Image (tube, rainbow, N blue to C red; front, side, top):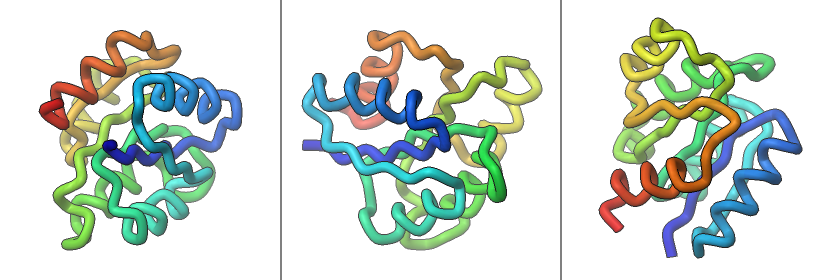
Length: 121
């Protein structure tokens, strides 16, 4: 069973994503901020990270960059999941090392297809 880390400061978004993932047989761990997300990723070593962008303190772009620079987490694919839907945001997210970029509200089919494509399952 693949383990997915959700990094989002919104309890509602975290709940929605957790429900989708658990109903598709994924194990879920969560973090409420970019800083906490980086720390949890180092300990849990998830198979994939779903990263929000707009969070207090360390935002999702910064957290993604940190995960990609850290040798223990550099291999973990990050999918940015955010309300920021500008093309410049998407380009910037991919430059930070994200594998894909989805906008909220996420479509369950798109989310699961994206995860399966990245994890090869």
